[in-house]
Length: 235
Image (cartoon, rainbow, N blue to C red; front, side, top):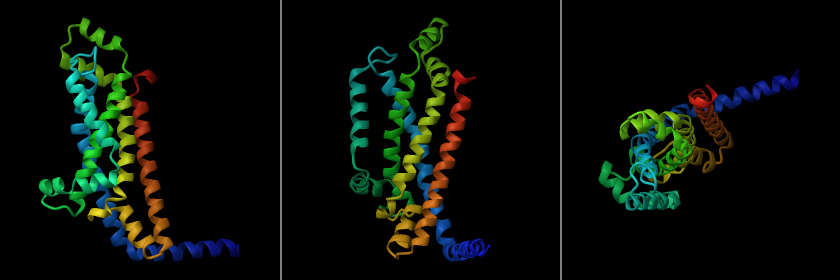
């Protein structure tokens, strides 16, 4: 019983200590949500079309175009192979041109969005490649236009993989966001480094790690559940 009381007392003291920084913690969480939210929007609005083009421009597909495929494929490969920290630094001039500054949460969202587009576009391409060719052949035999074949057949068949790919990408974006303190982007990772590591406050470090684990697990669970519900093979 004394052991249980000691544990309870320790937890009370621990949370009392951590709650001294609750304003900073909520600000860091908000900054992470802004950066990741913008990158997710970029992935959907730009990564989905780019990934679709990569698929459609392949040899034997609807819009087969070797030159366009080579250009897009090379661009995506270069961005994905770039060390993220170096990408952030090298994009400072472009970031300053787009948002007017190279520091802050919005500035941090620019390189994060670029890597988001490249990452998700590749996953989109892979998901579309898994769609059986018979699906497009059946759509063509029913007189569907090319746009209908994409939106009403291709995306419908690949929707489970697209959602799962976005889930995986989102988790990667959260991981990337932890290093955005280099451009003053803030976020949970930056808070953990400044308050937990640099000040040797282990309690803060552990608490922020717990926050990240809960956030990532929640996203993974939600994405996996949505993917299973959308999977036509399981319906």
